[in-house]
Image (tube, rainbow, N blue to C red; front, side):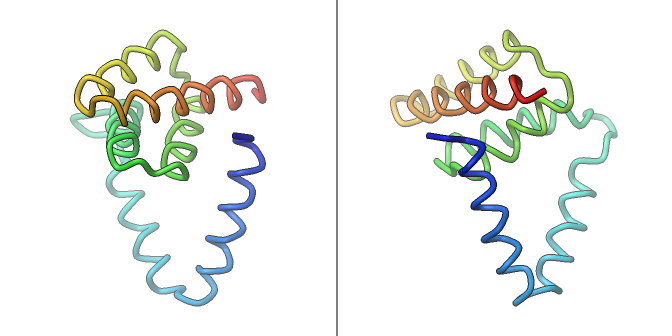
Length: 113
């Protein structure tokens, strides 16, 4: 999978959808900002949780968004692999395959700096 092209396409698709349902997108954005705000858990921990859920639900676009956020937040490859090991443990074979996809996304986004 070409993660860069995939993310560009999904962002375009979401942009088109957002024009049709602006209030829904505004609400979703507000909810996301509130959920990610550092408190008892920092944003990086919350994004690791979100990635685990994305893997469990087999959502490629969510894997891309949360992996990209984790790269921005300075997650190391070792931290990523440990998080993916936990996601694999909790989700079995399907999560193993999606964890491998997430690691590829991590490597791609990390190279882009």
